[in-house]
Length: 315
Image 1 (cartoon, rainbow, N blue to C red):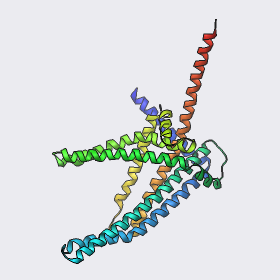
Image 2 (image 1 turned 90 degrees about the vertical axis):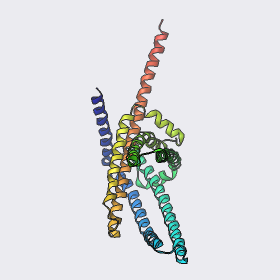
Image 3 (image 1 turned 90 degrees about the horizontal axis):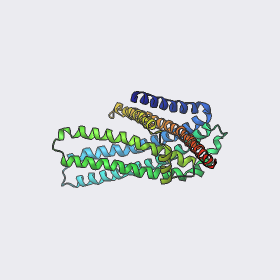
């Protein structure tokens, strides 16, 4: 019985993925436009950042290689150390700017992709020139919801580092410590996929409804009941795909040419972006299914209530 239940859940996940694929084919111009333009911006930001921080990384490597060869009591050592910290600050300043710009592009990408998926699903007429208006009109909800999600995610992984720190203190066999940390990371990553069900759905709700923040998270937890097994498997599929793509970084020969490293990183960033956008389309499809199931349940409850009331009125 459990085996047939699992197969049924897998078939439902395949149905969600197939419906998400059909959305791209239903309105190719809109869907591929909202995918291509943010992807182009993401790639440009990545290229600009990679080119901008290359001199800083080169200087950091150079200064760090000179420090061990310099007498710590000499003025040259102090000069190298000062230059090292200066390059270090410049590197992290550039990195913070990159993260901020990437976060803004990601938020706008989520907003336009969910709107485009919803409009295509409902077969509403829509023009590409209306996207900036939607972006300016509905940016507040996803921003607030993403802030709460980031806080929950930060707290969750902070717990992970607390546990690792405890293992370092109380562990007596350090040869097995790496295996324990790896197993703990896998366990917490799998459980995060379960928590991400509500997080992802709340983002869709905050975009398509006038509900955001804690209210969006609460509503997502309410309407997703009954669909958690299939969405959990869906998150695991996307998580494994993202993990597989991250192995591209292992192919990088960091001692090789800069263009080769740049091209490999560009493929990695683009692939992760496309996977994330397709996941949002899948959750938009799930949002409409959850609402449909909720409406069906209300209709059944209303029918039962009406029948009970009618029976009570009979003599």
